Image (tube, rainbow, N blue to C red; front, side, top):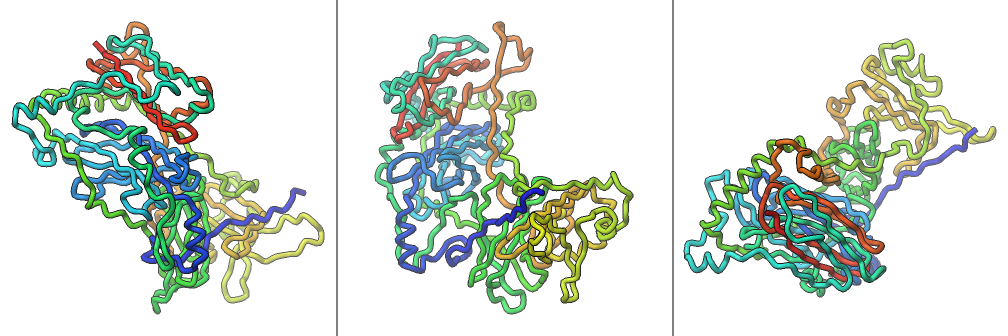
Length: 592
């Protein structure tokens, strides 16, 4: 007989919340402990700095320990925000960080007006030191589809226009003694293959994480200067190395074990905090995610989402069979961005043809988007039973019975309803005894319908069993938020819609922000004569985007194809060695 496994689901009881999104430091020991945790700083390598409506902006996120400039192991979640010149957040994305690295992108829609913007990159831990700790990158968006172009300052003086129309950059390298980029030649034709070599001259000293990109450079993109890795290292060298706080201060907690989900429970009638209550967080689906927490003396609960939850929908409810409580979900406060300094460059009317050409090319590219798809990288699979091997009952293999209760009685031989001695009922799953003298327990089972935790088992007794496809059962013992359970039962309906139709009396249903999915970006390829794609036009202005290149040995080789777009393209390597040394290399190639 297999070993009886007792699974303990982790939960957190943290500091007292203020407004549910920041925490009060109420003991001298907490002050000392938090000051020992290094502060962080972030760098964003991104495409642009001019992006049109109808284009994607791609970015790679670097998170560093502010004390030694090496990649941080503290935060597991990073954030990227697009902020307009009024300080308003246009969008905010959550990304998963692995060893201080994360990547993402966003599509610039036609609803975003032309103007000057900032890209902010940060972690929740960084927000304790304000905007000074946050990465701030310049970005201009051109939306030719809106009549209002007041977000751009238009220059009319001929001399000013001439002076502000820079030529594409020459090849340059800020450190090619450690790494170097090599092209086999400098001039290429349309749809021609380009081979690019990255060489590491310093072995371990050159090992690190880098972004490699090849993008069109012209008077539009060169109108705005952006920060590279070398400039970042200098500009953010003296940011605070630890969190600045005193006894009684409030702060944002670091997301050390994953995304932090938190909230508050109070009594419906009295409004008093729900103290020491078990709270269940369910992310529905076949690969459901179940998290438990316990409220503190002020009714606050906290839990980290370590696993790759598959659905943005969540249900949060008090685990007890009671409708006496109201559950609210906490939200992180945003930093005040109204004091940001925006670099506003006058735009020349002489660039109208360039704007028109690029807009037309974007429209054509988007028409063929489905033929050039990116692929999403699936996150790690979730084992909802934490190693337990479930017994599966596919109900179509048995005689069908009308209700869920009858199905348990007639088909499942190891689970059924029991009286709780208080006028109620619960489902119990039989123990899988390891020893003949093992103590018998009468704990209830964990029961889920389509991944939704069922707090009151009596409510599903008469559920229409004809809607049920299968039932998975494990007989392990679980301990959740200080409470023992005997076994777990996961019921799956054919439609998987229990979350949509069920409204908990003691909780809430809500959306939870999903991390931006990691992607394998589409790479255009051609045969020697460029005929692979037939007559499909190719107006890519970003020819290569490798967001996170990990260099460990002597180097790497890259291959990409030019497009139908003529002009000068910049080849850039931007990143940091494992020791935190910034590296920036740049070369140009011409497509004729």
